[in-house]
Each structure stands twice: as C-alpha cells, then as structure tokens.
Image (cartoon, rainbow, N blue to C red; front, side, top):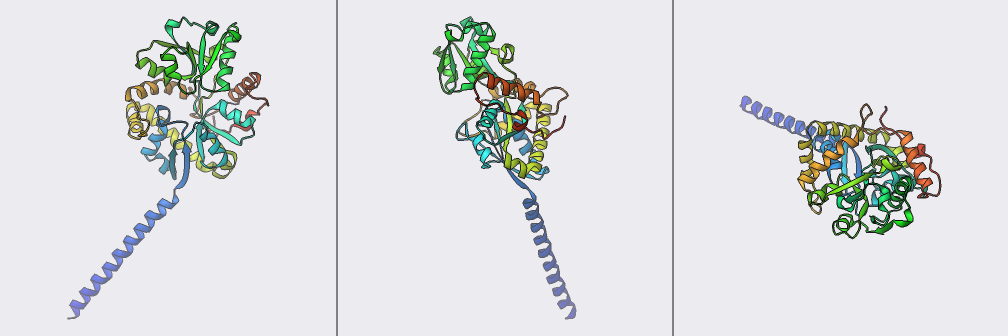
Length: 336
C-alpha cells in the first residue's frame, strides 16, 4: 500500500516539475521576445531591387541577431518618408540626398545616417533616334519632368554647362507618367527617370533608349538614396539604428555573394498592389550593385565633401534660398 501511495506521490511531483519547466520555458520565450527592440523603416516606394538587402536581413534573421524587431512600411505618398521620419512617426526612412537638403533648408529636422546608393541613378533619358548626343541638343526639344524643381535645375545646369541655351528648351511637367510620355513621343527626353528602373522597363518594351549622366555635365554626383531619421529619434535610438545598419550591411554582403537567392527573397515579399517582374528586377539589381558601394569604403559611409557639393549646387541653382550646413544634414554611424 505504501509503495502505491509513494508511486502516486512521485507521479504528482514529476507532473508539477514538468509544468514548472514548461512555464519557465514559455516565460523565457516571452522574455526573449520582449528583449527585441522595435524599429520601423519606411521605404521610398514599393519594394523593389534597391531594397533587397533589407529584406535579406529580415529573412535571414540578421535583425533579430542584433536584438531588433524591424517593421518595414510602404509610403502612401512619396513625400511621406521624410515627413514621418521628421515627426518620429517612423524611426527610419529611405529618401533622397537632395530632398533631405531641401528639407533642412526648410528647418525640417531630418538627418541622413547612411548612404544606401552612393551614386546618381537619375539621368536625362531619350530614344536614340531623337539624335540627342549631349545636353546642348535639347535645344528645340521637349523634356518631361516629374513636378520637381530639382529636375528643372538639373536640365538647366547640364544644358548651360554644355554651352546650350536653356530658353530654347521646353520643360513639360508629366508628373509620374515618365515612361508613357517618352514611349508615346509626347516628350523627346526625360529627367527624373532612373537608369535602374525606367531605362530597364523601356528597353524591355523594345525602345532603344540611352541617357546622359548628370556628373558628366556639371551636376554633382550624389547619394541617390539615403537612410534618414529625425533628430530626436537619432538621439533616442542611436544604438538601435547602429544595430539596424549592421544587419543591413550583413544583408548586403549576403546579397552580393548570391544575388539570385537574395532577389528571390525580395520577390517572395512583393507587395500585391505592385507585383514585380523578375527579369526587370534582376537587370535592375545588376545596375544597382556597383553603384551602392565604392572600393575600400564601408557600406553606407558618407563623405562631407559630397554633401557640401550637393548643398552648394542646390543653392547656386536657386533650388534652395538659404545655405545648408552639410555637417548638420548627416552623421556617420559607420567609421571609415
């Protein structure tokens, strides 16, 4: 009888221990989840090839390894990323170097923390049969642009630096109908069209297009895409932001080793409203990768001289009315 009671007691004790261990494991799991710091990033547009490293970092667990829970958001409007970063509605956003400097000139407290794309993607794009060989050839032509004072200044600078007369160039605001306006010959050339996107799509559709590079005609090479944050967010979350960029850098390294596998991760996360064309994104990534980094410079590192050149050009071109101190516009979270 005693043996039976002892066995029953032993079973009860073991059951209690198992429940306790289970509860402890659940608590540990919950604790681990709580240890992850939340951080959000808003893309500049729908997910596409330029964002691949971010999606690779998320899929491979690089963010979690850094103790981060990263939320990737899409903008409802192209102006949202900078605005929401400035007000702290999102922690990070992807935007444009020139646009950030415009915002700084308007006392909007945003700061760049890393260069995602180190070189210009914008270009003056045209059909080869239009006989445009240099910016001066835009005289007598119609150039489409996307409602941007920066785009107008780009054309003006390039034409003048090539010895042309800007008063002979017609500028037409086509909004974001860049490709259709060139494809249907409503305009002779485009500015604000990207060599990794519009050029790739137009070529796929059978159009024989070429482009004029901005730096070849006096417009400073710029960090086309930068990671931005608000000044208050930077002060509050600098450590998390540094962790974020370490994970993205690891994602970029993984992507370079196997671009096809990295791109597939992006394709698996495409937005239903903006389905991706695998061939287009493959070609886009080939264009992008050499422009995202320079030899012997850490991924994301920003040079003060580049910020100074772009700020000076914006002021000299009368895009901004007040000079901007480039030192206040960016901070490096990686060292050279």
